[in-house]
Image (spheres, rainbow, N blue to C red):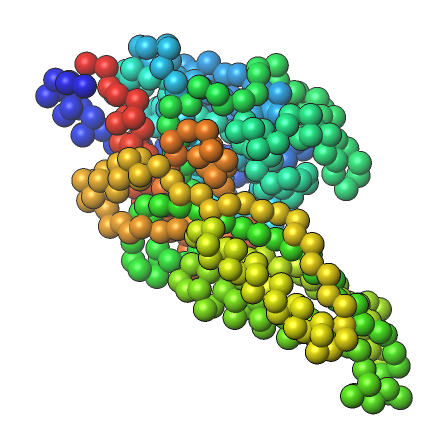
Length: 423
């Protein structure tokens, strides 16, 4: 599209209001604030309702129309001059972990709102509509599966399945949505509605900070496979049972933990392997452990490596079982394929970061994000900014205001390029 030099100049000169963005983040963080400076705002609680209400009020004040779909996703829409064009969308989530921070998810939502406020202040109109999404239950702290709202939107699972899920008290998603007033009537599904999707996010890791970079150009998200592994030996008295006659499930589990670490380490730099949970039975001081249940989390940037890690894990378990006489059962409980992001949008982010004078580097996301599901139905890309010491999912999570502003400026430029300024 050909535009006038004046329009191009206005686009190049536009910058977001970093202080306004920061103030909005702090206002939202006050809802569910914790004594240590974090946020506890679990999905579909009354605190989540308060956060949603605040976002909706801000969006309507910015001139947006707001709709809510059947899983409670919120979409704030700034109209474009061509209503037939699919929207250029951004967003994230505002639900948190029980010991969450101020920025995880919240930054992506409010960066999108700041883009709209900036366009309004500059009186710039786009051809395509601009939308900001608030996705339901991304964290999965209260309900599973994680990334529920974006998953329904992208067709990863059905609305009926999601609505039927219950929390620890037996409350269903459907009941919780009705209780907070966000059981929406708009249809779910993304078919033809999203022309491009961008998500700004704190990195949740230490790479950008360690390299002294302000913007992370996210090229892909790691694929993930999660497992429950059960090791069954024989509990026995710790005193009378000789070492060579024991069937100690915990001893074999300890060896397996080290092997999970090896499986990932030999696939540097992007291989990941984690054992985050161990349950020992009978968990008594003077009883040899007879059973251990443990989690295994494997991640890799491509299917070939992820499959190889899976095969390595299974081979190790089989070998340990034969050597020890301990039965080892593996159940895969989660599988996300590696998700590359759209090269044209990735290049747009890279180019705009450079043009704005920000130091930048390509990174791969090790965490799951709503963008992973959106990438199944629309061209998608992500923008990362550093967080202090790489710490997230923690009340001390922190980010610099100037870094948040920088990421939002890149988001503004990338969205304008995708939505096209009306001359």
